[in-house]
Length: 294
Image (cartoon, rainbow, N blue to C red):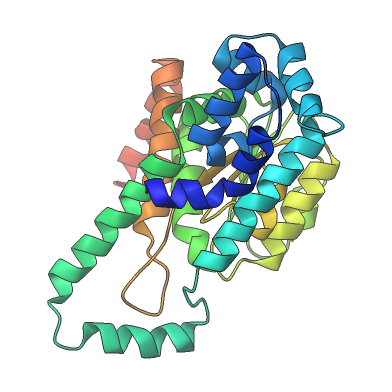
């Protein structure tokens, strides 16, 4: 892990070595080095708040490094991170290729133990890549949004459905991506800056979900993305990016880490709202119980 961080941040380290920094700027530089992934997607205000320093100190730091401001600085470190991911990822995404490789891996292996180990590694990636304050901030944004839209198709349908059901039972104005006569763009036609979109997309990445996110971004809605890496196509639009690996020993992506991420997000939201949805749950239960729809 330490070697990985050194490799990922080597260009940034070289830049720091050749720049005379103040004590406060050194503090910022140390934080960036130790939290490189997170800073790639933090706003300048969030970084300042995290370090309990002024926003102007963050901007001054980026300019002293030779950038025009925080936006150019962040673009540069994202490019470094993306280069690292591109050069260190060789996982196949095409199902037929994954099928061939998975059959080779499973030959002579204990399937139960192998799947367990892979699943544990995937779950660990959720904890490593998405810190607690990211879940806190994302859940705050969802609660604050006027309308909450959820999109995720095919391989992401399970986690999308879970989020839709739980959030619908928890918060007002929650809308799941429709199936049938209404298409996704009709569905999102009223989205605005007061709303949020939760988008779920894993390899091979749905173009439909990408365009939905693009549509929401143009409307200036808050965007929460669940995907595998910061290099995923729709990650560039994310205000809150929750990443996890979806490795599996078969031709399909593992469903468990995405569901775990979705469950974590819902749990943070439930804790924050307390018993405010109690009346709604009673109403739903009264009618579902009558039909035994448990």
